[in-house]
Image (cartoon, rainbow, N blue to C red; front, side, top):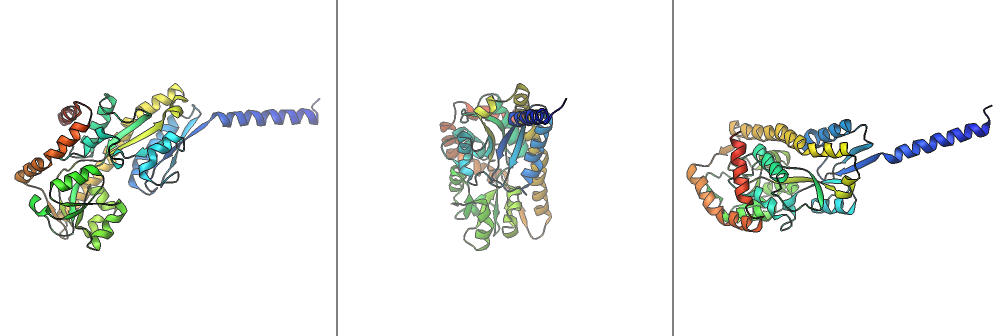
Length: 333
C-alpha cells in the first residue's frame, strides 16, 4: 500500500538524485574581454564552444562563454583571473604584459609572418612542439594570431622615409620599438581610442591589421594604407590547471583538439576578412593603397634589425631559428 509517507520518501529520493546529477555537471566559465558582437566571438569562439559542448554532451561538462568582459574587463588581468579561479578559461594577449611572455614577442617582429594563416599555424605548432615558454602554470587550449600589422594614416605615406615624425598608435613594447626604429613617434592607446584621436588630429595614424582598422573605424578617418608586414599579434586561450585535471579523459581529448579547431576557424574567417578589406581599399578612389618597393622592404628590415636582436636575446634559445624554419615549412606545404 502506497502511503503519504512513501510518496514523500520517493519525492525526496528523486530530489536528492536530481540534485546529485546537477552537482556532478560542471560549467567551465570562458572569459572573453571583447564585445559579444565581435566577429571573432561570432565566428571563432562561439562555434568552438558549440562544438565542444556537443562533443562533450555525455561528459557532464559544458563551456559557458562570458563575452564583453562580464567576468573582468581589463585585458591585462585575464590570465590572473584564471589563476585565481574567477574563470576556468580566458582569452589572453601575451603582448599586453611586457616582459612576462618574451617568447611571444617573436610573432610581432616585422618581416616574418605575412598573414593570419602563417602566424596562427606557426604559433600553434611551435607551442605543440614545446618551443614556447611562459604559460607553464596553465593548460594552453589554443594559440593563434591576427593578420599582419600595416600602417593607416590620415595623410598619404608613399615610402618608409615619409613615416618619419608621424605619430602612430601602437600597442605594447614591440610595436613601440618598431615604430621608433622606423623614425615614427609611438603613441600607446587602446583600440577604441584610435579613430577619435586620428580624427581630432592628435595622432597621424595607427599600426594595426586591416580587420581591426575596419572594425574600430580607423579606415574611416585614416584612408591611406601602407601595406607592409610589421608583425602579427598572438592570442592564447588558457585554462586553470585544476579545472583541467578535474575533467574526464574524453573532455581532455576534446580540449587537445581545440587548438587546431580554433586556428582553422581563425584562418577561415579572419584571414579572408583582412584580405577583403585590403582589396576594397585598393579599389576605392577615396583610399590610397601603397605596397612598398623592394628597396623600402630592405630598408625596413635594416631599420628593425636591432628590435629583432633584442627580442631574440630575450626569448628561449633557438626560438628565432625555429620560427624561421616553421614559416618556411608552412609556405612549402
